[in-house]
Image (tube, rainbow, N blue to C red; front, side):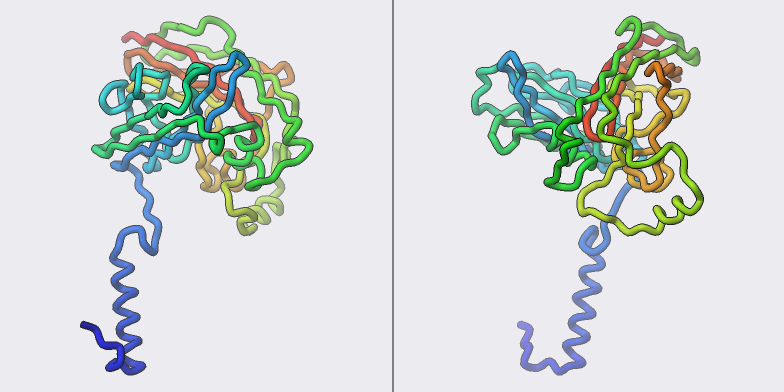
Length: 312
């Protein structure tokens, strides 16, 4: 047994140093660790909101612990909901890092106190998210804006309370066919009310860039630049899809120059006056894909989807 009555000042210092070395050998205790690949995906229940017809929407997201790996997990034992149908429209392709309010599952008005459980097994690690209609998890637009970083934690403003989500409309069929290596056009129309007002113009001076790079963090929660943008990404499908022109990331990449609204120097892209954006999508493998489009004004969002059957 260690007897502290026998330790002088020098001995106490040695003990303290040994304890520090011990802490440094424990993964993640002192230094947070991040990974490019090989880690699991943590499903997240973000909250619920009511629908006009009396039903409810459970809102889900996830944290992919990898910075580069984008796992594909088919519907089944490793990616399912319970009770009831295993397939509730969840993604099978997982983008890097934190993706909040990624999709919603509708449950009937008589759902009551039951739980809806989303199970994911990625890289051999199983995780579950438990959705419930408990009052503490009720979500409104202010919570969405706050959680995604448009607002500071627990704050609001007349502008944010007046904000309406953008409206994203896919022009043409919601089911398409394509061939490997041959781009298809995704024409989308975006409408937005102009709120919240963009915090930044579409260009930076060198002095402004320097100030932003040297500015310390101003909030304890994740920060996001307000400004309307469109993103397209894989929602389901095993191959890779390239989008032209490159689009902002919908996930929280806080690195500088990462083309992410959560990045330090990100600028909102120019949106045509007519609100129509033409995007080319090119597939590198045959198969069936679901592509996910999101219009995001910084505070709120609107999603659309297109299914593409790709042949050789």
